[in-house]
Amino acid sequence: MNIYICSLLSKKNLKFLGSHLKSFNKLKIPGNCNFKIVFVMSPKIYKTKNLLKNFLVDKDYLILKSVKDNIPESRNVFLKFLKNKNVQYAGFIDDDCTINKNWLLNMIKFINQNNCDIAGGPQYHDIKNKIFKNYYDVLEPVRYHGQLVRWVATNNCFFSNKVFRNQNVFFDKKFARVGGSDQLFFSELNKKKFIIKWNTESFTTENFDLKREKKKWFFRRNFRYGYSGNLIDKKIYGKISLLIILMKILYLTSISLFFLLIPSRKNYLRACFLFLRALGRFVGLFNYKPKKYI
Image (cartoon, rainbow, N blue to C red; front, side, top):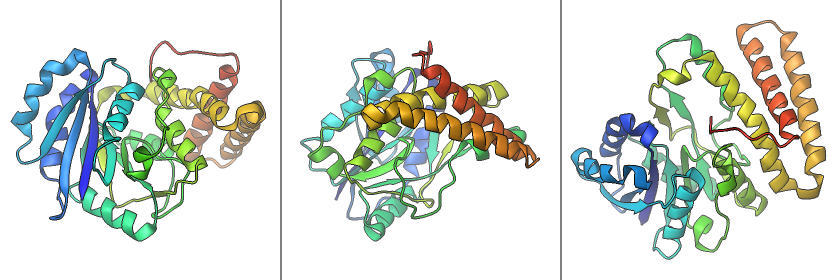
């Protein structure tokens, strides 16, 4: 059984490279598995390829070069590479995280026991200021083990070769600045009747980053989820997308007001985050375009 896991290496996350690679060293690999890590690099950091051998002890790996420093296109480099390969399973892991040592064992077990094509898992967060634990709790979707979902994120996902062997679904490069190309990608596969489920036992942990322990970052993130959500809905729903978007704006606004009526710190955050998503969707109706990815 051949399994290839992709990590997109970026300049901004090079400070996490050591811990990221060391976690792969601890990853348990089944005896019947030929496991390989595929690193996709932009030209800006291609010289750092020599650092990989300093950290990876007994894991096989290869390097692919992405022509552009563009997340969706870099993911597509990996998918296109897989097309003609004898690979049974593949996946994506973010380069700013560490991977749990039982991640692969649990993913293989989950896929086999749950009759699904794609599995996603949670990403936990290494934080210093405990106040922000509530922020992350509210930011992340609440899903239970084995739940059927419409999409998962590429920060932690695993899928069968059905996803790349006979499909022409790729990550949309137009989402490079707004984010959400992974949500659109898996939503399109869901529309094609691919079965996507949630596996709580295969998790990753995002390394501590000071810029994420600021309220402004969370507010901007939720605002971004709003306008990127519009673009996703336009792709998925086509002619009726405007109606869907308006209904979601109304829903998000109503739910945010509801949470304000039940006083608690988490409910205040829920109300604030949901309202920002509604606001992001509203300004998105006027073709708002951010200057950079948040």
